[in-house]
Length: 163
Image (tube, rainbow, N blue to C red; front, top):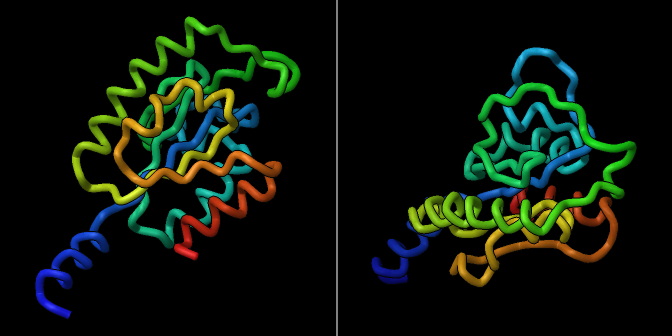
């Protein structure tokens, strides 16, 4: 292998991966503010937390209830989820459009920094509508859209562990 190919492989290996987690109906009720990654407690959050300590090349963005993205370390107060169940929650087109514009700015800043090799999107299709069109990211995107929560959580685990 020549030195140019080795340099390219090393730079790819140095790149981080970006995980984007959707909002969660399940959340921790601690009265004091918690980091976003700890406030929400849905399946994808539990999988992510389990492997984040052992995986050093993953940065995380979290989608709040208003569909906007924040860094996983952002402190969030407890806000109870709306409604009785998550599946019945409705999101207005206006809210989606507003969030999409803000999220496009956030993702552009992250992705255009050149420090990420790929993005994993862990959320339902309904919430993914608040993200910019995936093609504009110009980066490999992993977004499992078939199967239930179990297969999607398994895909997240495998992605995090590099399997």
